[in-house]
Length: 479
Ligand SMILES: [Zn+2]
Image 1: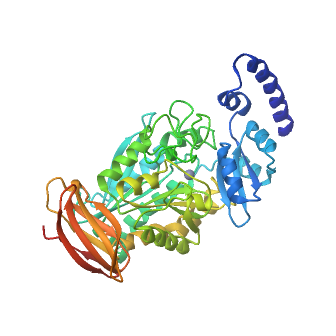
Image 2: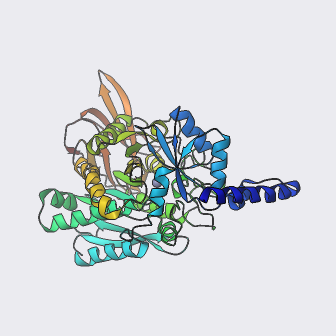
Image 3: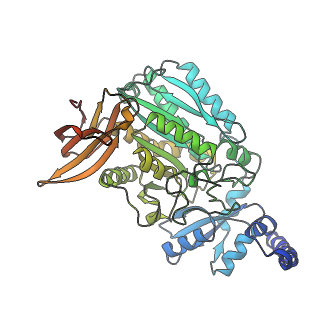
């Protein structure tokens, strides 16, 4: 019955469109608004040549929900216009799972923006010694975006402690992702209080920042009935926050310039208040690591997002940690363009490219669960399965690498250049921009390094040969 209705709708819309076409041509916006309607069903497509097909679907502006790499299938969130275009392009779609997923209704136990705020507020109020709630900015509809900081001396920014960031819900419908980040907050507080040795070490030696729900407006729209909403709600049509970051924005067909698209990159680089809020936090705290939790596909993604692009001198560090994360939670690891398709304007490229963070995306859950699985059945299973991911990075904070503080004016003008010594030759690993508070924390693999410190544009002031082992090495350069 639904299909007949859809066909009638399409026929009527095509007639309307033909009369309008005579006057002003047929725009994408017209297609989306008149022919399209809400993207409210998930269609599954079996791929023949996965990279070619995924690039093709992406270029068509299809709203790709997730992949099942073992079955070589992709789920796409569709409306009538999408179905028509998929048929025209020769894609065969099936719907069996989609209807089951969608007809169940959004499980009330998932959190809306005010419930997230309440949970974080109660956690901070009950544990004021180690937890502090702060707003990092407001959404376009005026909602606060909340960050919980967990650390000893929580009201001080301690230059002797490095920061780490875990965030969820760039995309509104990915309701499992705030659960993962809230679980991390609750786990850390509970286990710190009960004296768990790992939790006590992490909290005492790290500044842990948790942003469970970045896309507060989009999530409110999901709760108001638009279950498959992905973007924020800015300008009415919304922007894909995770295509809006101002690093190689819109550079490689990894986003869309069409307002109707679910990967619309926004009117300008970094235009969106949610992206600005996260960037403000990252630039202030300079986290060593970040995990941005998304759903679904059961993959770990590391930078860079554009086809063929790789991280720089510390590629081995970035990719080996990504691979370890993948092994730990039994997810496949790679760049977005290796595992899926090109992405530009994503948060991890900006974090790596601009702030030298080691950032990862974890796409939790599989296509079997989709975006909104039964809470009772899947919430605990999911958060417990991915706990080792954020825990591994907290452990990694005190392992192989280099940490110190420079007592200088204008610390962020200073650089710590690290070169690896291999059989007599030197290769640059990173030219690290010192944090505003004078600290630096550079993650490395064990080995022999040459470390040079200078003010940008000036001669080297200090040069040392260092051996990095399995623990974090404290290094105070003599300037
Ligand atoms: Zn996502």
